[in-house]
Image (cartoon, rainbow, N blue to C red):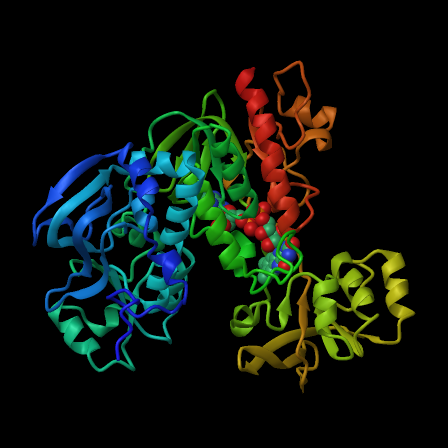
Length: 560
Ligand SMILES: Cc1cc2nc3c(=O)[nH]c(=O)nc-3n(C[C@H](O)[C@H](O)[C@H](O)COP(=O)(O)OP(=O)(O)OC[C@H]3O[C@@H](n4cnc5c(N)ncnc54)[C@H](O)[C@@H]3O)c2cc1C
């Protein structure tokens, strides 16, 4: 017997049907109607098609709409909207291209709002804002889970390009279908119909029309229209470079406080935190939250307040005159009254292919109480010979059965503080392996299970059943692209506020009578936050805190 309370369309993975497809009350419908206009519909009328930009938002007053995914052979019904229900998902809110076609299946009447009015409604009406935002985000999550969208990726599990595009689409929260060259018998027919040779994979087919052969992330973003509604010419109050936790926090605070904010992000929102399987020490999430979920929430929150996010790399700041201009890889030059640099850092990873597979599941870049709890009574490995590695080894020795420290060089004297070397020598549970490099990591079920290391002098290889590796080989700040515009410390991190000495300021020709504000660089009105900043604390919470603090100083600069 079929369940008539379930909506027609794709099967849902979540039980939250009332939140995904809520029915608005008459009072809520009246409030929406006050912001839009009424429109009659006829059976068969197409309200918008897949690929249309800036499509309106519709509330069904009477009649019925169906949302379908078109294809050259058949249509898939995604869902059906009856009286009191509404169209849209995340793309509708941000004016991006429609993923599907909307068509009337019964005559009736709709309320129509253009996307600016709908965004304004979400921002100003708390009750409706919550209902609409939640429905849009949950609908998107359903589409991602069901792999139903406007793009098909054809690739191979053995191709690095395929993995790159999968990660790009997944971490941008864009639903896609995947067809594997080796596993899917229909792939050859599909490739033939588009005259694509198997050697040209990975191939991305957008809306069944545009075919991209081994595209860059930027080309995929353009094809899906990620950036096309964003004006890249007008002067912004604030341009933020980097959409990790610090940049997204600055965007949320800046946009919610009325600033015209543009964020540039090379690849996908979330930064390093986005690759963490579970963040357990971020305030307000007692059972932890995955980095990707935190990033997706922050991304939607920033856009809800009106911040725009351009998926493109910042390549230079033209800093010789004000207003500053931020140059983008696509050639755009965006004028900005103030700039926040939030480009983070990249942990140096030993060149081991499987390392990224076990990140957060046996491979860690920090040794805090959370990680220590995971390895109580077990053997662990610390890779690296600097102070952070020494601190980690001493700390982990309190709980672990044995700590193997692997260092490439002959000893610690050159790279570690004397007091730490002594502590290591005095801790029998720490075993130092000099001239030793980690070679391979293996595991099943997603978790690391064994590690091979090699003595780089004798060539001898050892394999151990060890489930936890702490990579403490330092982080490289993403600051090289700044080309000398702001003062850096000896390791390339950006100096800010009180860390800038009088000598630094005079070398940088600081032009103002006041000193730099907290988080302000040697260039007035340009701030640096999060992991790219000299002296930062590498934590999600501190990155978010700096993002919010920077905005209060941005306001001060804008008043100057
Ligand atoms: C695997 C892992 C797990 C972690 N787990 C935790 C944890 O549990 N708890 C915790 O508190 N901390 C954790 N951390 C640390 C935390 O993630 C970082 O401190 C935090 O992400 C720093 O935020 P950020 O915004 O400063 O920089 P990042 O997160 O590094 O983000 C920088 C962003 O800028 C973008 N970018 C770089 N250059 C450019 C450019 N030129 N143009 C445009 N965009 C650019 C990058 O693509 C990136 O998205 C973890 C880190 C890792 C790697």
